[in-house]
Length: 180
Image (cartoon, rainbow, N blue to C red; front, top):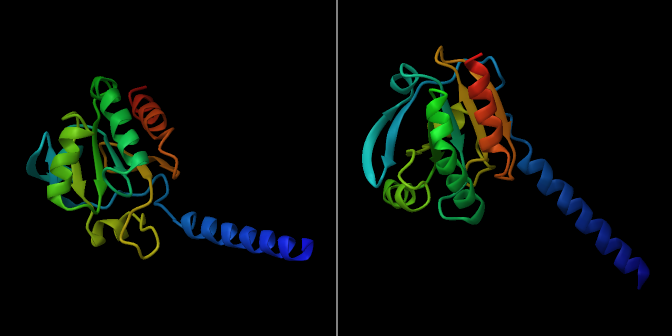
């Protein structure tokens, strides 16, 4: 019986390690890299609009954060945290946009209900997901990865962690460091 239990525990450990290697296999873009330019459909306060990264960067640094799926617990909590911190991001001269592969109808609702009309969320199509190297395996979902992009288009900070906590704090610190 103990041999079977040991074998079962060993099998579970191997499955767990395999799952970790799949989720941490993301090779997000490194600091110093020029952020890939893109345009996409986005929503702010329930209204659809065209978002262009270069246009946003002309106004100041951009926090580009990828999240797996709207209305899931971690993504909802992360959106709430970014919404609460928007006065600080704005005071530091930065804009924020959340990105997922959700459809625009879902993002319109998410922008009102969970982003609290404070910042936009955009459609991360397969080309954007590939350009930012944030694909979560072959699921079509994105990893939880946050980029801070300076006005010159260079990535100055990257935080990739499945836990939503820390993304707001780390990106806000990076934005504030740009002002020094």
